[in-house]
Length: 161
Image (tube, rainbow, N blue to C red; front, side, top):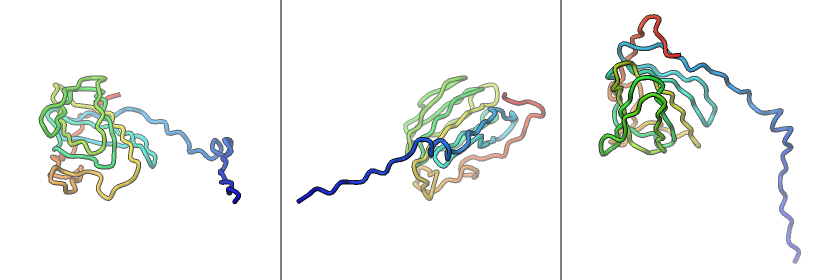
């Protein structure tokens, strides 16, 4: 009995380059806040997003998890205190970061004398029906009272850039 040859689909490297998506250029800039928080997408693909977030002094969210997304935060300005299910994990200042694998429960708060500015990069292999859950296992929308959301109040003419 003769073994059947398996076919291997070949891809021309020139086709990949010609049909590739365009790069996205973005500026890491956001208006600072006297109250509340802001969250803006700077660039994204079907797998990854880059966001800039600003929290006024004392701003925070609640313990939650992103079951389908690995993500990282880098502190650009201010200070952030991160907590896990068992309490404080780390206090981060400028140019320090934290990597949160998908499913990790965490929360953070702005704990410095100035607004907290974070660069957030996330990657999802697949889109799940619920992107954020609370410790009760239920959906927890980011812009909800349950997540301590408060609309940002800009400081006129003052930006992180």
